[in-house]
Image (cartoon, rainbow, N blue to C red; front, side, top):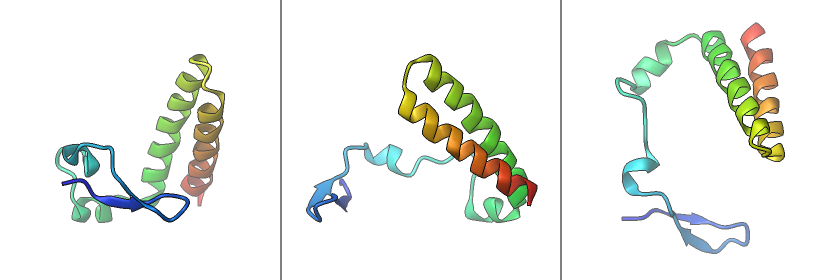
Length: 82
């Protein structure tokens, strides 16, 4: 069953993601596991991943996506240092 979301205009739209992908989580992940991970370590990991993804997007000439990923990396770097 597809979940309903609101579009920018406020109209209900059906999700296009398959049900099994809507809540995809890494194997062994649970809210309890996430609560036990330190915030700075998580931010550092996200910074690493988004940096790599930004490079991939840039190489594929996906400029806007590369820019947004680079901004996410910068934010994660800042949070990792707090």
